[in-house]
Length: 308
Length: 308
Image (cartoon, rainbow over all chains, first blue to last red; front, side, top):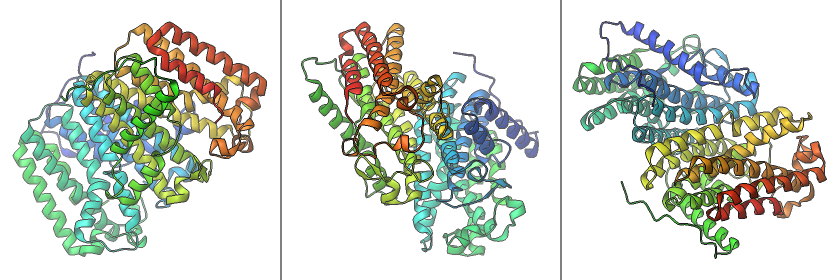
């Protein structure tokens, strides 16, 4: 087994902006190494995969992996593998969501969507191949100092988070909900699957690359659940009050598509109050986790106060 | 860790037909347990996943998993997990292939395809969720007596076989090849990715659930490569000479779609000679592997002599 790369503990003197920039560059480089080069056959597929993944996005899931990994003292190369896995699943879900048979979107992160740029068939294969790559990348954490038993648990968690009881299931509920009204509990369930499951997996996989106690894992799950819901509530608020330039996508599209949102179900003010309440829950978990959880706290603040 | 279920060695007195029926029933039951019940939310997605996977198909990949697992003395429950994983990947690839943006097929195994029965958006999510389930099922082999390090290697192998350098990549090459002619070497490369990679993974994962030597694994790879190509050559022959009733799909569709096939590139007789030659290669590997490989030999014969 190769020597594990050096574990880091959080450098609390580093400004959060600088940390985000450093971690963003780190995952970008790791993704660039993971994705087959654009001149490797099949060339068009690999070009499209790189187009879908590289050079864009807020990288929220990788940031959560790194933040949880710093908490748990995990080796960097293993965190790179896990961060890439989460980002590949997220990117594949966006490519498939944008297809004409789903949301039929032509703009993503300010660029033409993958099926507009490369055709529908290639876009479908891009998503399929990215999901496979995500699991291969997860397995690679075992080459970088993570115990095989922990890696198996990471694969199981990612499989559950991405599958019919997680993200794909949330999408299916979302499809069925178009033009209907949902109770707040049903809306929460939909978003817990659609967005929360993968955000929770990001925290869990990052932590699993290092060491944590059972009590800490409970707090990490509580933190992840709060920020997962907060993320979606804020998304729904921004869908109403944001503008396309800042969002990089069409504002108001969810409401226009007749999809139930927190704003449509609870109203704007109650949605803002819910986001604040979830932020408080996340802060409480972070406080209980102690100073090594500083970046998890920073990310929670960012998720709720962002403007795009 | 639960007690591993009993490992079996091949019962050579059991007729191959009876073995196929027994193993087919075994994987059907395992898939039924693995797939969420049809009354679990999201109901429509789970109904469609079960429709796509249960009650049909030749189960070639699961049969290869069991045959290789018998060779390696692997525990049954672990083989069930691996067999389900391979069949879920295969089933997802069929669902996505049949979509209008790909082959646009309306009939599969004599039934309406998933997108005809459930709509395009649900069909896409069915495929996505089945791929996630495949990796979760692979991870579950660790609960049934397989070492975690072996399970990690299984995940990596399946990820590679399903991804852009394997099955999804083969599909992409296939897309680009429509209306063109391919050299025999390029055709072989396409099929090695599109079909061979997953058949090879079936043999490798089945063997990885038990014990084998490095020399045996080399022979297993050689066997898998031969039957992987033979499978596709025979498919192409049957596409020309078969009939829709026996195939459960439209005969001649590949040729009609302008796809290069072994028959279009080599001609019918040379294709038959190639299939025979590949069968001989598979038999040689099986002979070298010894009597525990009896079912691998039976499957090779079946692949080449089948009529549908």
